[in-house]
Length: 187
Image (tube, rainbow, N blue to C red):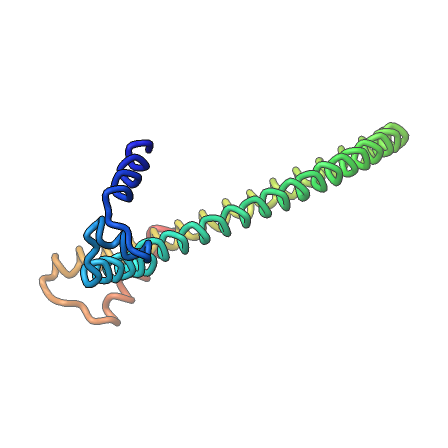
């Protein structure tokens, strides 16, 4: 830094002094106005381009990030408040549930004998209903299987008969043969 000051001081002493200090500086440093103006314009154009295409998008992106961060912080605060409310609500619900459980236990102790007898009767009744339903289901299943066996048996008899006879049986022939075969099987 002192070197620059020394250079300026030496240049000022060496320059012929005229009345205008700006003119002395221009002559000392050989300033050419067209080149200086072109350089200033180049710098202004570069600054404009950087602002428009580099700094502008970067600043926009940074502003968006800042907005997202602020929104995230607001959401975190909201979640913390909701969590605190939830903890209080949960604690109140647990306390209420504990009180309700104590009340229910005392009621259960008071009515345990009648409740046990009632449940035993209900269990017996339920078991009887289950047995009745199982028997009905077994009967329906057996009837379905018998019907399937009759159909299959009739189909086999018709197929065997048509193969033995060597001709295609009509619907009446098939019905008559099925009825005869089933009557013999059931009898």
